[in-house]
Image (cartoon, rainbow, N blue to C red; front, side, top):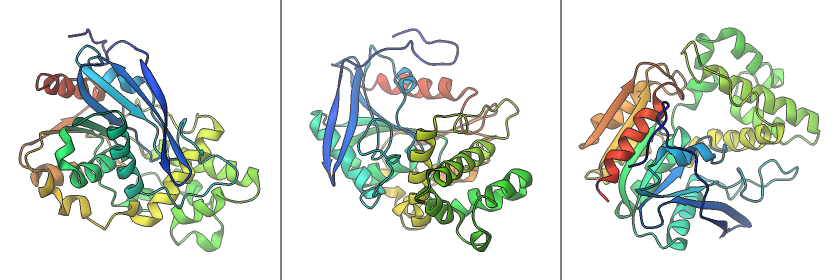
Length: 321
């Protein structure tokens, strides 16, 4: 077993293979593989939707025991076309498309079954994929648990917790749209012909996202300090998914949880995660025999001991290779 750092991650490594995979609809996905070519296969699903993968995700798996697959979902990261492009069509960017992309990537890499790790939106995608293809999943490790529901909680009800910041967020859309679907209103601004209007909408959306990520006193900004092109791509994809209910039926993933019975899972959630309240993870755990719920008392949506808890789970499952 490799040696982990204090934050729980394994030392940085570089991919030994990478490429672009054409998945149809004009989309090509960036993918990479690192770790042990003969190790236990695992795929990491990034959040957002739209943040793209990051090198730090490789460190959540023991490189001596895992064959780690990272990729950028449609429109994000190094995948093409980018959602930051001035003219972008998001029609072929849905949860169902992403599930199909995962299967295409698994087949392309010659993997029979793999562990699926996801964080935040990546949890929603992991659950949707596993319910569609349970025979392809060995285990699930899910951090900052979400299920694709409750978008009004983030865009409107959370104003009771952060009233000053929420008013700035709400006031970023035209007055006539402030009582409606704020994600849809922002989506229209993010596709405005004026690049300054698009950039301002992306900044405001990302500022609000950083605000509600955690009630922990040491929570650090992430999206609001990112590159403007990243902010635009991220905000466009999120505001495409949310008005459509993440392209899932209300309550679908909890309703269909029986499809995952028999698949070992660890659900990891921060008690200070206000954007994704703990009751979602609790409901999934209670309905999922064999799942384990780990509640962290030092963090919200990210940070704290999250990486330590994730690598503890992946280390345990590595022994089942």
